[in-house]
Image (cartoon, rainbow, N blue to C red; front, side, top):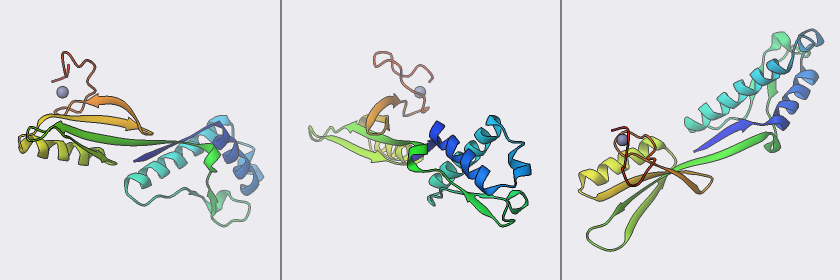
Length: 158
Ligand SMILES: [Zn+2]
């Protein structure tokens, strides 16, 4: 699943759009905290919609604050976004053959459901590894979903 963070370029773009679309009386009261607040609102909107499976990359600027008195839209370009693609890989040792079973999931819950299914089928050494942009970041405990710090002692949470 993709997660978006609006970077400095994106915040500058937001400032320019608000300056162009909003009433001067609204815009002149804004400061860097206001631009950041707009960025966070857009970012949250994008991430929520991504999770719900209906991506959306813009939010409304209400008619009461726009120069046009119509709804205007706020979005940022690709350069204004840092995109992280998070996936979960479920693996296990296969007793029946030397091959190693692997599967990638975009939704964390689905990865844990699959891991549970493998365990219930009697598969050994079921593991879940979190990936960011195709690099493995950390192994997660199949039982409690906390990161496993050390391979030697296993999960320190449960
Ligand atoms: Zn645990």
